[in-house]
Structures are given as structure tokens and as C-alpha cells.
Length: 618
Ligand code: FEO
Image 1 (cartoon, rainbow, N blue to C red):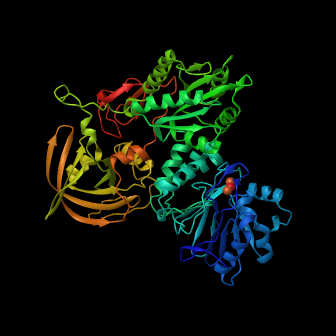
Image 2 (cartoon, rainbow, N blue to C red):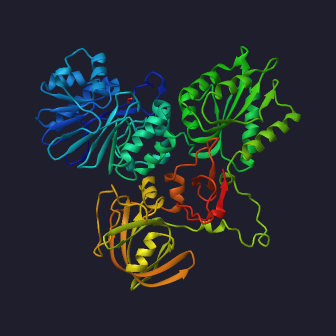
Image 3 (cartoon, rainbow, N blue to C red):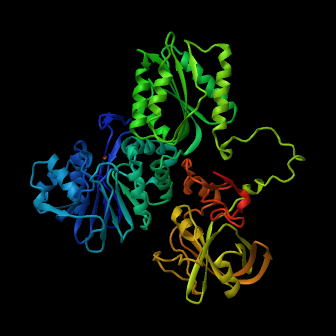
């Protein structure tokens, strides 16, 4: 009997779940099963996106037949040839003999390697940027090589704003009756499996992942349909922001993953003591016995944490076998941008530490701490000093912003004004737009407050150096677009990193939308718009406070408003380790890097608006 899930009036999930599979690709355990997703669009033309693994072929064919309801299947888009998504292709040609196969040239070549039926005569070859009209929908094809195989492409339906994302944004785990990520507690129950899926299946290809993210950044995406795991229709930034971090090998969190290989428990004991002392300092730690926890879980956690401690006994004059296999996995998956500390053990000839160092040094941007520990069989009291030194070294390697705050009650008198206290205030983020004649402009601000509700009045602070500020001074009118959590970093780049005096900030933006006052607003990744008419203004040197009556207020979505903190945690790319020859200054407040020498005295950070005094040399 069929088992399908509706996504919209004409798009249906026709995939299936597999909970009998022990090892995905023969390597990765899937204790919670896996879903093979396939989607059927029933427009004027009927179009299927990919098929499923042979294990669930029967259910899938029944699903397709049910949704078609007697219609023929006109097209199948093959986005990914890997057999867990193409195994039922031949069956479809037998059931729907006139079916055409939409695919790239690379896909065709790979399909011909895997199958023995005539594919070429059915093929409709597409390339980057090609489109295909299905009636009411228009499909746009975007190549996504190496995410996860070279032929992969993703497809964007510009009518429904749906991205069929192939392997990207997928996850291990069967769907268990739900289809949408917002139907489950994704962060709690599925993010670990999404990370494990990404790190192990696609993790090696971070550059290619970032390239695809850049391509889809320009698309207005409301729904993501991956080939495994849940469909995303809300809070898309939850998964997109993770992919940004994973693709760029930027750690999600500051903290230490301690992995140990211990035959008789002495290396484990040292690892436990280290972990305990790091916890005493307030740093998060997690621990794995490499002989017990599957390597795919540890590789995934390596993509999460900023610091990795590798502790291994010496075995056959080398690294302990399970640790050696893990290190091979870590390097094969291109792990980089991490701080690593090493503990070795060896009762008569400890060599594992040096060998681990050699292997980890082959990875990019790995900072191996000098404070290593060498044990001879077991930790002795004098070596507690070495543990303390490793703890200090790990703590010192954290940026100031990540150092756990001291637990002691501060001396209030000694800290009359701590300049960082104001950062504890909560802020939203907004695009402030104005219009002067034919010229539209906008900038990012973080201070908009409701003053009264009757009449409805708001205030905002705008930097006097900003062009938008001058427009408001002249015209007395503005719009505030309230950014929501799905807002991509590119919105901040467009409206915050350049001046409207030099460029047209709306150039290439499209999506022209105006309120009754004729001023543009931002219709995307925004949950509301307020139009203001200035009734008063106050000059505070660097900033002007405008007080305004609200003349129009429009609610655009129910998505949560983005906060300054959310922006830092989830949207703003984490600062990359500076290249050695890079000259410039980094903002101590938000991490923005100004490249060049010297930093102008009047420079204002385009992100957090702090001045040159808050920058330090790289
Ligand atoms: Fe699920 Fe790369 O395939």
C-alpha cells in the first residue's frame, strides 16, 4: 500500500524509509534508519525528482503510481546517480515507456556505466543555468559538483521557490511519519545525524559545498527538499548556517573533543583528568573512546568543536590501530582550522605522539600545541604539571571572546565602567531605507524601539556618516524592514558593507517592493515593515535619534526576528585564522577584518559600528 506525504497541491514526497540497513554505503552505521526521498511534481507535465535505493523500490513504485492516478510519468530529473537514488530508474522505464530523463552530460555518462538499457535516446541534457518548463512551474538547473559526486546538480523551482537539493541539507535517520523538519525537535534529535551525514559523506568537499551555497544564496528559497532526511519549509537558516560553517571548516563551538585509545585504562585516566581540569576552567569538553565510538561519530564531532585532544598508546611501535584509523579518517575528510593537543603513552618506547603530529600536520591550519604529554605506562604525580600546562595552553589558545568568564563576583568598585557591559543589551537588526528623488538607499541598524502605542511612535538611531541618515534628514521619511532569522549574510554585505554614496545598493537586487510612502522595503527574510514619518530628531554627535509616527505597518511572516546575538552565533562567518602575510586590523567587538595599513582614525566598523579604537592589529 502506498505511503506518501503532500508538500503542496502538486508536489508529493514519494520516497520510503529503510530501518533494516545496518551500514550506509557499507561504512556508516544507521541505527535510526535512513530515508530515501523522491518527489513527484504533478504539473501539466509529470516530473519525478530522483528515485530510491533498491531496498525500498517496491514501495516507491507503488507511491509513484498512486500519486500519478493513472497519468503517465513524463520526466525524471536525475540529480545524483549514486544507486541509493537511481536504483529504480530502469523499473520506471518499463512501467512508463515514454519517460524522458533530464540530466547533465556527466550524469548521462555515469548512468551508462551503471545501467545496460538505452538511456541516451531518452536523455534531455541540461547544463548550468538551463531551464525547463513543466506548465505552471519552471525548473532551473544548478550544477553542484562533488556535493557529493561529480555529476550532482540541484534544481530550483522558481514558482514554488523550492530547492531540490540532492545530497545537500540531508541527514541520516528515518522520517518516522513526519516529513518536515519543523514537525520534530531537529536541533535536539537530528542535528547530530545531519552533521554526521555531512561530515562523512560530503565533508571532504568543503570548497565545493561553499560554491553551491554561494550559488543558491541568490535564490529566493522557501522550501528545501533533500534526498535524505527532512524537508525544510521553516527556519531554513538553521541548516543553511550549519552548512556555511561545515563547508568552511569553521568550528561550531569553542570546546574540546578528547579522543583516546587506551588498552589498560592509563591513557584514559589521563584523558579524564585533563577533561575534568578543563571543565573546572569552565570549558566544554566531550570524550570518546576511539575503540568504542564509531569513527563517523567522532569525525562529525570534529566538525563541531574547536579543539581536539588525541591521546593514544603506542602499539607495534606506531599509533594504536583504532586511533590510526580515526586520524586517517580525519585527514581524509579534510579537517582543518583546529587546535590539537597530543598525549602519547608507551611503556618502553612511546612513539605515538610524534607519529600523530606528523599526520595531523598534513591538514590545513592545524595549530598543534607544544604542551604535549608523554606517559610511560601511567600518569605519575610529577606529571600533573604537564596536565596543568596543557590546560593552560588550551585556555590561552582560545580567543578572549570564547574564554569562559570568571565565576568570582567582580569587585564592583574596581570596574566602574566595563565597556563590554553594553554588549549584554539585546538588539534586533533592521534595514533602514529612505528615498531622495529617484535614488533609493538603505543601511543596517540595530536600534529601533517602540515609544508609544497611541499614537504609534518609534525611535531609531542612525549614524550621521550614513547616506540614508542624510536622506531622512532631508525627506523626513523612512522604512524599517525587520530582519528575521533566515536572513543570509549577503543582506548585511549588501546594505552594511558599502556606502550608498558610492554604489547603488539595490543594483541587481530585484524584488522591488514599496510602501505607501514610495520608499522601498526588503520583502525577503523580513517579518515586518514599519513606515515612519519623522516628528523630531536629536543630534548626539556621531548619531541622530529620530522619533517618528508610524504611518504604515505590514506583517510579512511569522518567522522570529533576528537578534544581534543570533547574527553572531548563526549568520556571521566566524573569523578565519589570518593568513601569515595579511596586514590589517580586526574588530575586537565583532571580528570584522579591515585589510590594509594603516587603519584610518575615523574608520567605523561596517558591522557593529564601533570606531578605530576597538580594532587591534592582526
Ligand atoms: Fe545518498 Fe550521495 O547519495
